[in-house]
Every structure is written in C-alpha cells, then in structure tokens.
Image 1 (tube, helix red, strand yellow):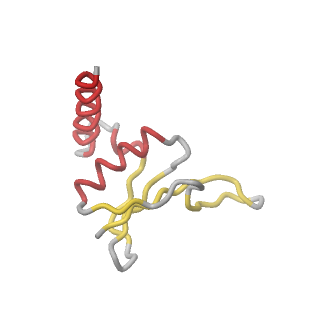
Image 2 (cartoon, helix red, strand yellow):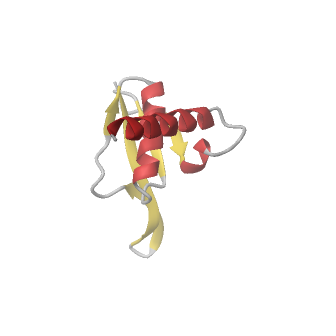
Image 3 (tube, helix red, strand yellow):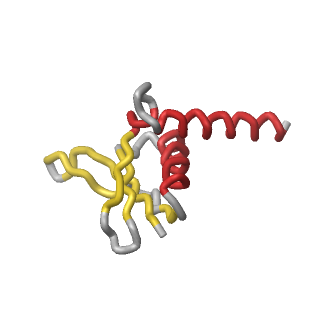
Length: 96
C-alpha cells in the first residue's frame, strides 16, 4: 500500500518550513496510477498543498508530485490531468 502525504510550505516560527498540510489527512492508494489521479484531485481541491509525497508501507519516499508536474507540456503526468478532468466533466453531465 502507498500513502500520499500533503505537504505545505510556508513561514512558520520565523523561517520557511515544509510541514504536513493542516486538516488534510494522508491518503492511502493502491498503485502509482491511483496516486497520480488522487494527486490531481487533491491539487484541484486544495490550494494550500504545495506538493504531495508518495511513500511506501515502510515510509520510504517513492515519488514527489508538484502542482506544476501536471501542467507542463512535456510531462507524462499531463495526460493524467486531462483524463481526470475529462472524467469529472463526464460525471457532471450524467448527474444532470
């Protein structure tokens, strides 16, 4: 099992720090593909998240997702972003 940890960067105690995003718990995911889709959804929903750290069951960092990773034209994660947005739009149309 993998875990996505939302991390926020900002000034705390007078210096710049990175810390777990308050009030947004870590998310368990089954695979890296599910982690990528969850990352897109989390970035879209919460502006406070600076980046997401993906760790394995031993707590070792597997990958880090930055907000810009999903928007760069050369990034393979851009396809993930488009797929998630397309699915969300399709779900909204069927709800009406």
